[in-house]
Length: 368
Image: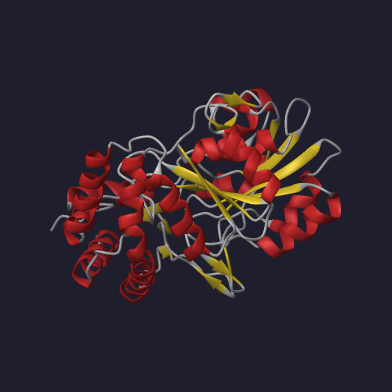
């Protein structure tokens, strides 16, 4: 049996008429950049998510950069983020002119350890980029309290946490603003690069929209210099076609996670993901910790099961950040886990047969 890590073709086949119609409409209307399809998606996402402003942009990385620029973050500032994210969470800090500062992860939930945040804050700290990893929200309430006490911005990176919740509040609705990615493999994914900013702050929303469109809200009237970070009409129309399905897909991911827990529960060599109390984990990634990880990964590949690593090297230990002088001792939890983490296939279209096969293959590996 073959079990891909993500099966985007199956998702397309399930809603093919809706996707094909959306693409055809954009082509017939030649609405390729901006226009009514982008505006429609912004309005639909804002309504479903429960936020005032959605600013569509070219990708999730841009959305973080735009936010920091429009919050006035730059040279001499520091921005804190978590040690084990994708590089977008940190490279955009440098691109804005600031210096990234990393914090170790919670040993159970893999997001920023809120108990370590305060000691990382200095007089130069301007913001925290809080990454909600794998589909689970960090302790955003505790972190927001610290940010308010210190007078710094909280920006939420929700690239992996569409419609996740903590104490009934969705990811991205606690801080000043949030970044979303709609990369094809995300829980809500386009058919190319796409992203957005969400915020309830009117002034910030206007600034971000302007900056993402060459510093202009009206063509040829450039109030500032900006960048070109616009979502194209095809991606917006595809996202609008998918949006009515996202809540059902989310519940199916949660159901599949429960099936994994059922089938993997007796294997003592692995540690299953834990759910933070009062949380809704949407399982963008189903990440286990596994003994003899590399050999297990190779064995699964041989048996037709595709897996992935999120992430094989933590951010502060990448060559790109060697100038900061961090060592593995600065991040003992994240450093240790990078040798054992393994992400198993996770998507709404997984069947229990797939999940049972994955579990049986893992069990057989450890028995042998």
